[in-house]
Amino acid sequence: MPSWPVHVTVAKDVFGIGEVVAEKINRVIDVRDVHDLGRKMPKEPTFSEKFFDLEAASKRVLRLTKAQAMVRSILLRDEHANAFFLHHTLDLLAPRLIAANITNTPIERCADNVCEAVCMELELVSRKVPYKLSNFSQAFKSMLNQVISHPSLASWVNEASDRRLTLERSVNIQDHLTHHAQQILRKLGDQAAASEVVRSKYIAWAYGYLMTLVSRFATRYSHLIDYALLTPFTWEIISERFIRTTKKKAAGLGRDILRICEYAESMEEMHSRIIRAIDFYTENWLRRYGVEPPQSCKAKYADLFISGYKIVENFGMEA
View 1 (cartoon, rainbow, N blue to C red):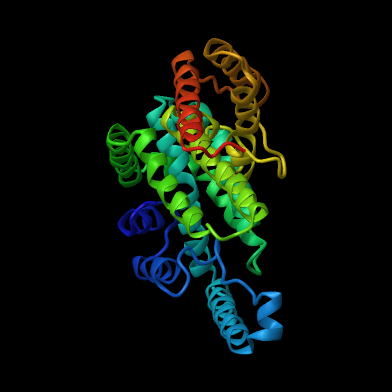
View 2 (view 1 turned 120 degrees about the vertical axis):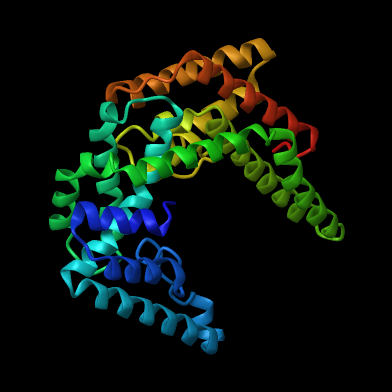
């Protein structure tokens, strides 16, 4: 996410927030006990901890109480509150600006979509903290063009996009999956004395886990996920609609593609059906918001997902 200098300059130049205040809030959010404080909060004690490990439960309660007190103290002062929400706004905005950059989509074309998505994600943050977002959200919407065109942020987005593309050129799906599969196979070996039922459940879990990795890799390295990030959908919805491969919740494209791979009778059928499925999701989830992945993106996604599926098959992890 954007470095502190970017946060500070945007806070000062666009929102009139003092540098000292911006730096202080950035440090609290990123460096203190909980990274991304506000979007993330310490977890409450588990049921078992409350009854069987009072020391662990007490530590969790103390950590959560301190974090909540810190957030409340920030939100008591308007300038501090604005710096707090601006930090989270820039962190949420950054992946979408990078997506626009990588897909060569003029940000002006999808600015309304991106703004709506970020504001919805901020609302999710506000549910964790005692603060109404209406004033900040209105200010952000009115200054959106100044934010996304700020030289410091634009420069950071260009550099981050270049770093990501460089990383993508150095990674292949075979190595990516092999690394994770080796860990899984070692654990399976440790279960040699376990019952067949236990081993079968673990293999089923491992298959689902590896296929989720395949789906994530295919959506990211084909850049399909970048086109999805140009819609007004939150990351949670995008993840469920485009990445998730399990039957839980509202899994969509990822699960559909996995089923195609499992039941297609030939590679040609597999590839053509995947392209049709992407076309369906494009029509229903992207095109209505002015987003249209090129055919090369769809073809690369299909190739990557099929390659990943075949690799997992070779690991002997079929469900």
